[in-house]
Image 1: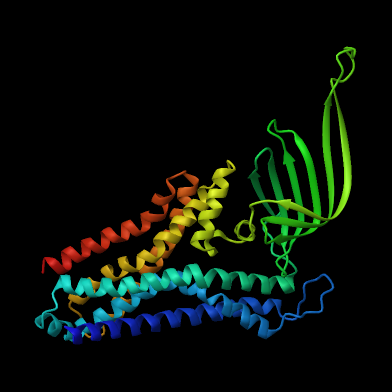
Image 2: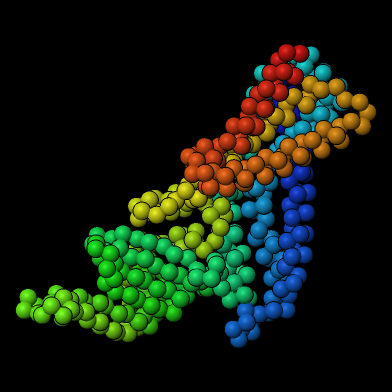
Amino acid sequence: MKTIRRLIYGEVASAIALVALGFLALFFFFDLVDELQYLGKNNGVGGSDIYEIRHALLYVTLLVPNHLYELMPISVLIGTIFVMARLAQSSEYTILRTSGLGPWRALKLLLTLGAVCVVFSFAVGDYIAPPSERAAQLLKARYQGKITVGQTGAWLKEKQAYNTYVVNVKELSPENEMRGVQVFEFDNRGQVVSTTEAPVAEFSASDAWVMKTAQRAEFEVTSGTSTAGPGSPPQAAKVTRATVQNFRWPTEITAEMVSVALLKPERMGTIDLFNYVRHLDANGQTAQRYEIEFWKKVFYPLSCLVMVILALPFAYLHFRSGGIAGYVFAGVMIGISFFLLNNVFGYIGNLNNWKPWLAAATPGLMYMAVSLGAFGWLVLRR
C-alpha cells in the first residue's frame, strides 16, 4: 500500500504543480503586458522616479501569490483529473484496483492529498498573498503617487466612550502615510462637536493617529437666556479654530482597517477581515460585503477537497485512444465555472441580503453534491 500511496501522491502532486505553474506563467504574461502602458512614467507630482521594466517585473511577481491562491482549487481539479484519467487509459488503475485499491481507500488517499492542498492554500492566502499584494500596491503607488478608491477615498466610523467619529481618508501614500484626512466628531445628540483636517497623517504604535499641521475647529453651543425676546435666537454658537503641528487622535482604526477600506477586501487576510467586520458591527455600519468575503476566505481553501472528490470518478471511466484530452478540457470548464460561481454568489448574496456564510458556501456545497453524486453513480454502483 505504501508503494501505491507514493505513486498516486507523486503523480498527482507533480501534475498539480505543473498545472499551477502553467496558469501562473499565463497570468504573469497578461499582467506584464498590461503594465507596459505605464513604462517611462512617474508619479506626476514632480517625482524623479521612472517606472521601468524592472519595476513592472517586480510588480507582477508580487501578484503571483494571490494568483496562486485563486488558482489552487482549479489546479487541483485539473491535475487530479489528468492523473486519474491517464491511469485509467493505460489500465494502470485497473491493476491498482486488483492490488487492493478500493473506492473508499482511493478516496481516502485523495482526501489526504487534498487536505495538504487546503493547508497550503490557506497559508498562501493568509500569510503570503496579503503582504505581497500590499507591497505591490505600494510599489505601484510610488509611480502613480497614491492608493485611493473612488473620488472621495475611504470613509470609516468609530464610536468611542462619549462621542462618534466619522473619518475620511483620501488616499494612502507609498510611505504608508494617509493623505487628505478629515475627522468629524459628533456628540450623542448627533451635533457636530469638532472637525479636524490634515494633509498628512501617520499611524502611531500607541493606538493613535498623528496628524501633521492639523486645522482643528471646535464648535460650542450655549443656551440662550430666559429673558430673551421671542425674536431672539434660543442658542448661540462659538467656533474656535487652531492649527496644531502634531495633533494626536486616539483611535482603534488600524492601518489594516484603512487598507481594507482602500484596497479590495478579498486581498486581505482572514484575521484582518474578521477584525474589520467586528469594527463595522460595533459602529453600526453595514458589514454584509465584508462578512461574505470573510466566509469566502474561510471556505475557499476547503474547495480543494471538493475538487479531488470530483476528480476520482474519472479513474473509473473507459477511455478510447486520445479521449483523455476531452476529459481534461471538461475539468478546465468545471474549474472555471466554480471560480465564476464563487464570485457571482458573493454579489448575489450581497444584493439579496443572504446569510454571509450561506452566500460563501453555496458554490462549494453545490459542487460537493455533484462530486458525491458522481462518486456514488460511477464508482460505488460499478
